[in-house]
Image (cartoon, rainbow, N blue to C red; front, side, top):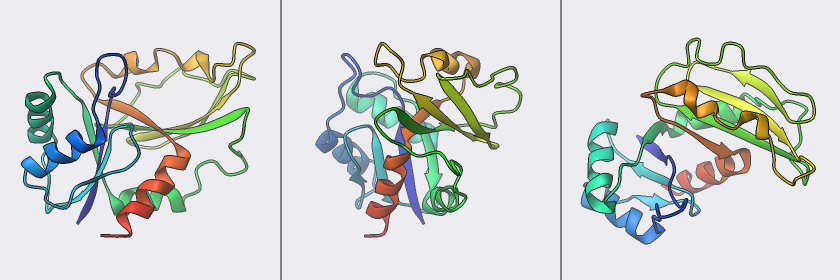
Length: 176
C-alpha cells in the first residue's frame, strides 16, 4: 500500500529538515522506496501498516527535535481529490486553498469556527480533514483569522497543505 507522511512544522525557523536527510531517515526506518515531495515535509512510501508513533520517534532521534506526523494512504488522498472539496473556489494570486490534515477525529474542535468575510472561508469539515479558502489581506497575508486554529487540537497533530501540493503528492505516488 502507498502512504504519505505529512510532517508538521518543519523548515520553520531552526527546524530545518532537508529533503535528502528526510529521505535517508525513512530509508533507515526500513522504507527503502521512500521519496520526498517538495521541501515542505512530505514523504511517499510503501508499507503494509506503518506506525505513526514509531515514525515520530525515529524522526526525533534523527533530527534532534519532535516532529508530528499525519499518515494518509494514497487511496485516501485520491478520494479527497476526487471529492472536489473546493467546488467553485479557484486558487489564484488572491486566493489560496488549503487542506488541514488531523491525526484524530476532529469532533467538536472546530465548533464555533466560522468564515470571516474577505479573510477566510471554512469550505468543508470531514472526519479528520478540513478545507479552507484564504484570501489576501491588505498586509499581504492570507487568512490571518485562522491564526491559532491549531490550538484547538491539543495533543493532536494537525498540518496543512496547499491544495496544489495534493496533486503533486498523487503524481509522485503514481510512479510507485
